[in-house]
Amino acid sequence: MRTHPGWFDWVRRPLFTVLAFVVLVVYAFFLLPSKDLAPPFWFYFSISLFILLVLGYSGNILADRDKPEFLKMTIALLLIAVLCWLFYRYSGAQWGRLREFFFNWEKLEGNWWILRNGLGVTLMLAAISAVGSVLVGLLVAILRAYNSPTLNLFLKAYVDIFRSIPMIVIMVVLFFALPYAGISLGSILSTVVALSLGYGAYAAESIRAGIESVHSGQIEAARSLGLSRWRTIHKIILPQAIPVVIPPLTGNLVAMLKDTAVASVVAAPELLKRARELYTSKTNPTPLVAAALIYLAVLIPLVRAVNMLENRLKK
Amino acid sequence: MNAIDKSEKMIEVVDLHKRFKDLHVLRGISTAVTRSEVVAIMGPSGSGKSTFLRCLNRLEEPSSGHIYIEGVDIMAPYIDINKVRTEIGMVFQSFNLFPHLTAIENIKLAPMNVRKISAQEATQRGMALLEKVELKDKAEVYPDQLSGGQQQRVAIARALAMQPQIMFFDEPTSALDPEMIGEVLDVMRAMAQEGMTMMIVSHEMGFIREAADRILFLDGGLIVEEGTPDQIFSDSQHPRTQEFLSRIL
Image 1 (cartoon, rainbow over the protein chains, first blue to last red):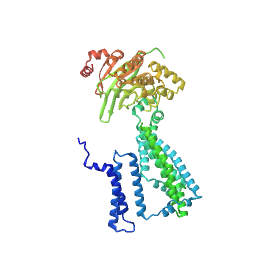
Image 2 (cartoon, helix red, strand yellow):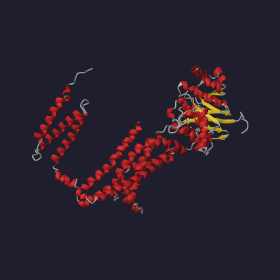
Image 3 (cartoon, rainbow over the protein chains, first blue to last red):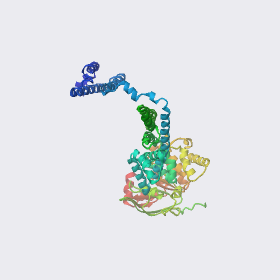
Image 4 (cartoon, rainbow over the protein chains, first blue to last red):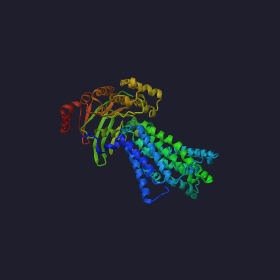
């Protein structure tokens, strides 16, 4: 077994780390082309080489098990800063313009309530569709647990069809096409029905997987005691399946909450739709940025919660 | 009920067949079990012992043949099989206790939901049964905190809670550590003495010799030999039985 350092080991020494850093700084100040002078080859070659060197340098440190974590964190933040700086320097963007178009909060003054109402509609759509999709999923999964070949054919068809059609297509068909058949659902109802049916198909699959994870001996024991199929499902299978199913179901619900934004194409007055209205009336994209930040603020905690649920179940 | 009529037929099986696709597992089994009789089913693995037992309460759907439980043809169309199953307690090799319920809840579940007795009465009966299997102090414990032998005794109490006329045991001690086999067999022995009609798939020779009235020896999906334990163990006639016994004795 070789225990002496390999030929590449010098790249792990602190001296190399420091020297390479100095080299990169020098490169940044003296070798990077100015953005006004742009002879095509040298311009792109020099920037590409610089980015490659920076990535290689940070990768070399981040992948090194023996380097301290604080150094890695510093390098990671520096890397992000350098990439932002490169983007800023060569994209032609200017702070003033960035602020004016993306973070022009004055434009939103007095209009925050519109976004707040939009968020309210988004959350309402999500809540109703969450209940709807879980009910649909539960019904389909329970019916599938009866293992009737005829029934299964139709249930499988439903699940496959709704997992195959894009959500936006379901909504558009419900909202724009159905009225020609004399059925006008309106934008809110179209959205709720589309989300419930679409995500009901996913919920059905998740719940079915949970039901199938219950050991077959459990079912045999229940049936041999004289419990009917329904009582076996209700008293034995579901209590054991539900804890298994909750993390994937919550995951589905998060995805569904995001998909409420699709409802803006059928004019449901939810967050994205209201933000787009403001964007048009103010001729400024700040409301869109605000909407994105609001989605983030709502969804990041939810995504973390799903993650925690999954971890707790693994124990 | 009148005095026990020991000649009353509890189970009658006529020409029972079971096929799994191309596999012909049971190839025409006919036998009868009378009240209070303890019947042991033996045979090499793959001989169809478990399948036979599981067909008798239709946990496996028989392919053809007739099964009469207390005179009722359970193969008749539209029969309420759940009703039949309440008369037959079943104990499994892997216990199959419900892991989300405590011992006493495991026992109460079927009497409350199927027999529709009150929670109070179910608890009373359940505690009496737990006392019988000597696990009264484990009533509020979940199955995963019980040893294998304790779980199997709770499983027996759970089956008895329905007050069945017949008990089936499908290799009840095969999944147990050796030191726990005795406690389960003690419970079964007591049940046999109380006059329970029992069918037991097992290879516990000592237990069968002393508790069983009759042994069915299965091979290749047929009863190749049957008789009292004495006849089978010391004077078996069929070469397959002799070969099997010589290997496990």
